[in-house]
Image (cartoon, rainbow, N blue to C red; front, top):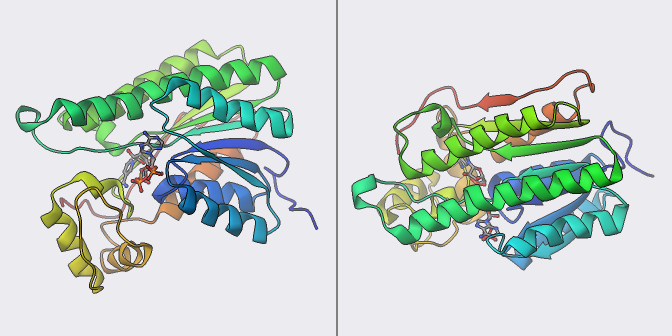
Length: 273
Ligand SMILES: NC(=O)c1ccc[n+]([C@@H]2O[C@H](COP(=O)([O-])OP(=O)(O)OC[C@H]3O[C@@H](n4cnc5c(N)ncnc54)[C@H](OP(=O)(O)O)[C@@H]3O)[C@@H](O)[C@H]2O)c1
């Protein structure tokens, strides 16, 4: 039996769907009956999510890509259009974080953040609007920003998220005559692998709170059960990726006359890792 929801039959692209928030959004959209193109660099993780979506009666496809390649972003959109005939939803979620003082930062980390968090998002927005305009259908672009965008002293990572909000607001003005909506989602701390590039000692602290004994390596993901247990242990300070997926679904399911420009979603208390 086909899935009957407000979003059923639509098609979506989700970048960074191999982990954390993007994975939760992709699986949620799949459960809502949306055909989802999941993009990321980790094929095995993407395949796991497709299996979950398909076992619940949904449809999905994988594109393994590094979105810092401009052509790969266009390819994501082409895949959604080729399969379903149109693109309804584009979620710019992929992101990386290299935290720390500006004076101590490395250009390599800055470049990775600017290329992934800003440039790929810009290219994605432009390509998604072109595809939506060509098909003349209603569309919705969701950009995953951060509460760091509300803090003027949030370093280079925060600067990339300020850029995301400026791009989102500008795009909204440029699209006033189009049936295309643009929403910025600004999460606080979420239990994901975004911290994979922070100091190993911080990650070891997180693992200790989970009560699970695993080795931590710089740049590597933590197992899902560690993140889930750490989130439970710190539930006042850290929300779940599924909570952000809920916010995305809320924005996507409003009637056409209602535009949600931004949603801030954060835990009850701020936690300084
Ligand atoms: N977690 C938080 O506390 C938090 C708070 C506010 C905002 N955010 C934002 O939420 C978004 C998702 O992050 P997350 O927390 O879910 O972290 P995550 O678990 O590390 O997931 C990041 C995703 O981005 C993908 N990605 C990174 N660079 C990529 C590239 N060059 N090409 C393709 N995919 C790439 C990763 O794919 P691979 O693993 O396959 O490389 C992964 O799927 C980011 O934009 C982040 O800034 C997170």
